[in-house]
Image (tube, rainbow, N blue to C red):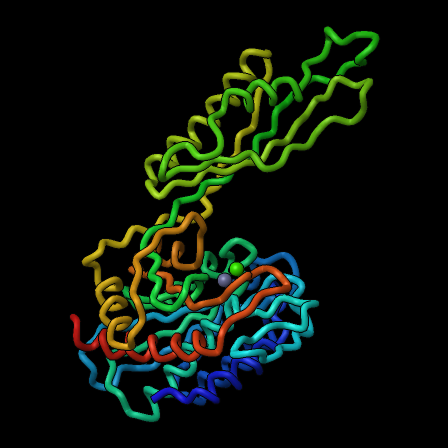
Length: 376
Ligand code: ZN
Ligand code: CA
């Protein structure tokens, strides 16, 4: 029922609409018009006002009222923004693949997701398929740290069940586990002094930070947990005992209790090191996103498994160490799996996707909407 040429053409069209993070306006306006044409009620929230760079485009939320189907309200989501270099993409079709000219990314992350959702909505309309209501969320600034999903106006989203189309695996891959992530910024205070004349009057912030870092467990902590210190800066010159060092790091775990324990451990080591040298540390923790842990018998998993089988995709339940908008949605009480859509080598100028995967994605989403009506 999907129209293969229409899918490819729309993908080729959308990747040529620039939408680097923070500059999604042109794509957002195009998508708003397209959703309206498909009969959705379209809103734009003001999540863009939380972003300090670029224009203030918001998340686009479309709602298609149910037309007699039995299924619950279903959320389908993909992000509008791309990483850099994403301006002036010149897509090329080559042996069943779509690639960029090599000077930019392609933008299948995440326009392949957007195209699958639009085609599914068209198929629903053209064939008057019954459903219990569909909500679409096209988010901004996912690549800046899930900024759009975090700032989304959840009054506009009533769905409690959904799918995000934003994972790199082949269609049929269903991400059901993803970590909680905390990040921190530790500002270690020292005391400045002349390094040659009066070093004993100083407290060396670099030394304090080094002690803390040497005692922090890092890397792969266990099967579910990782930790990293990723940036450090401070000090002015060799002849000054440094009075300040800033250290940035993160902790992630599929188990939220372990993620919290790891970030607490990191804080404790900084506090201990500061105390040892008679100084203090300002340790700021930010929870970046919540974990995903969907049970094998949860509604989104059952729907995705059944739908994948009926369109001849090999379903495969998977976990990831990264975060996506699906983490944020799950944290907001929307049971939401992230689906593999076949995008490959994302965030590089070698990014590509096959035409076959673009078509399979659309078929899969149509089938997900159908199965949602039967399975409840
Ligand atoms: Zn993405
Ligand atoms: Ca990405």
